[in-house]
Length: 329
Ligand code: AMP
Ligand code: MN
Ligand code: MN
Image (cartoon, rainbow, N blue to C red; front, side, top):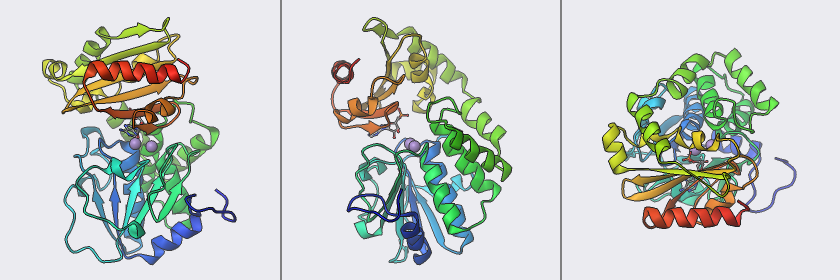
């Protein structure tokens, strides 16, 4: 991001954001619904740094912290309740969401003047008074790392663990195409500073519940291969969850198995439970799944996106198929 040219709606400079961080006394970090290691790790990292500077820091998240992220430093401070005695200068920092609505329905009314939007999604709506949006970054955590360096605070082992978690989450443990040399250098730097990579690997990428493994089998059994092998999709519904003793947190790795099938250009997982059909889309590099999701009210990145569909599973399957074909499937 250039610090010399700036148009309305574009991202603020690092200096502008850092000045705001120094200028405020209190912060609440907000994660998106169905939180992942990026939304949570980015907020916890910056929160830890601001606490060390003597600031008041809180964390809001509509959903509980998923089992596999409870190892993160300060994860136990994340709550749906908002303190009633927040200072008037509290800055609400939204991490890893293309729009305010991704925070859910339980936030109090917040003035735009008190919102900072830190993100790396395509099509971010720049909903904050301050927006630190860098779509070329691998994770929101690496956007935060830029801020930490400009804040000139110590990157402690705990902070380094949070930042490395954001990177490993959004690169699929260094597998996705966003794993650039720069990302690997930043990761090495975090490990040098004390990030616990074995812990992250174990908690997020190993340590699967037996229920998750059974659910994976059940979903793969139902997988369909269409469009001459270019499109692979499956679903998980309430009955499958019940039969496997699984819950929504156990669905995470299913879609990557579909995308990994030889010849597949787009993969979709339909999650038909909790009163909605949520869809995870993945691309192998040719189909822009962010654009496909955006036509149905969702968003994300070129290679990974998602949406919540208004309607039943059958309509969702048809609408997503049409949206992917419109992107060249
Ligand atoms: P997921 O499939 O849940 O791992 O999400 C993949 C990507 O799509 C992430 O970058 C999410 O932030 C984004 N995403 C998922 N669901 C939605 C949604 N309903 N609206 C906008 N973006 C979404
Ligand atoms: Mn996320
Ligand atoms: Mn992210």
